[in-house]
Image 1 (tube, rainbow, N blue to C red):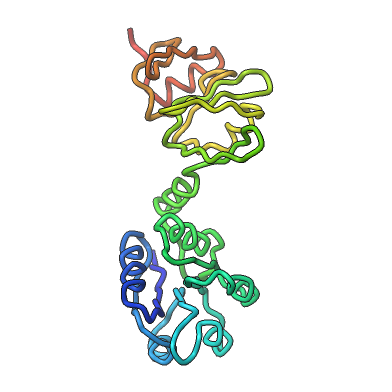
Image 2 (cartoon, rainbow, N blue to C red):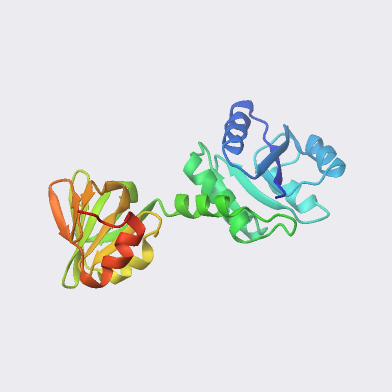
Length: 243
């Protein structure tokens, strides 16, 4: 597997260190250099292949926007800046993403995933493990409507989901949330590596299952029924029940 070769152009050392640390956490990305200004960056770009550039906007001399306009060939670019007002101009220049400082790793990961998911680099084929990692990470939360607002639900907090007619009740570690949704809609939204439908009225988080029998799943102090049409699949996933 070829790695995605990237370059950091950032005049603030602490910000550059954060990006370097984030890059090291992701398999399939190789940092080829980190420079403080556009002139240093051109020397690296002209001497070796670069697939992705993390580019600060506010730099001494040539700004990030001016640098993009001066490039003779297109690069995949993720802009990094503390100034929100440059977002529109950045996207008009067809950048991959726009990260506001201070940059959280979750947001950084999401930006990098766009490069892989869009298959922009012709020479880069991400491994299946990396694809699975991106999919799992990007599916770390959902939003559901409660009252007059959209509420963020972390998937890791979900114990199980119960259908109540046209509503579902989402049982979390510390609370429960009721929203106007069909359980079949949520089933399509939730990652299959984390959740499993056990009944027409129940979806459970695999890692929250404490015990099971041929007909029930135990989560916390609840015993949830396994539907007859789901039984063979559930036992295939969890392991055949032997009394």
